[in-house]
Length: 236
Image 1 (cartoon, rainbow, N blue to C red):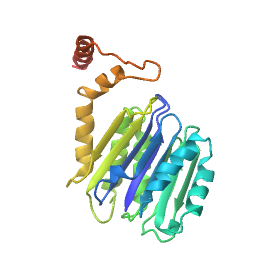
Image 2: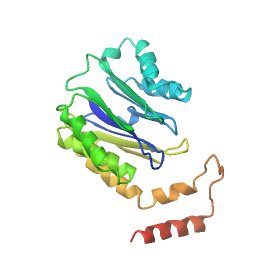
Image 3: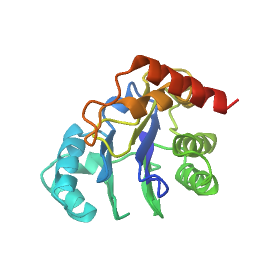
């Protein structure tokens, strides 16, 4: 009932997952990322534990194929599930159960994996991939959204549209960007708008948050405001 892309930006090391569907609040259950380690997307008749346990196994250093095999072996409902996993080395594995609704399938490329079910056709994944590859010079978040919009233009979820999400992690355990459109007539357009809003202040502010290397972060409000204002001014 969904399609998603897991990708790693080689320029920054960020992992990202973008997803869209004709179902409520897709961002609450499908995308899962472990910073600097990998990502998991669980969809179709979603099993949330694929994401929870999949990240645990990624952190243990298990290979994606082994992770997929382990997860579906423990699930008697596996034929109704879809799952794909990618690690920081670019290794990818997927599972599409035989009871997933057509069109369903998976494809992969250099540093990205795309999977979907209940789609208008194979072109949804093909065009998502083509757009992602073609826009390699764009910032990572915008590249992921444009890829998903290309898939939607190709037909997307054959039932229609309702929700979309974008999750990106950098070096820290907390996300660089976590955007959700839970219920909207045009969720990918709204996701694009929210990403634009994030560039107004959030992307400049997040560098002052606590990190593992700097546990206190920056707390000087005047310094923070001055740096954000300078960053905004430099874009004009």
